Image (cartoon, rainbow, N blue to C red; front, side, top):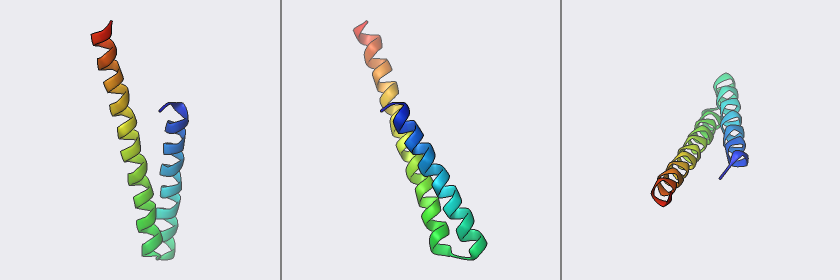
Length: 64
């Protein structure tokens, strides 16, 4: 997981924000909820990316 994953996560988050705002403006609760879901998905994936990086740093500490 590298920079390309971070960019994908940011894209998913941005897409979710647009969906949420559009749903809110148009009164489409389903679209608004879908947007929030997209944002949550991006946050979970980004947290996983950070956890993996932290694990690699710990491993490097013990193997150095």
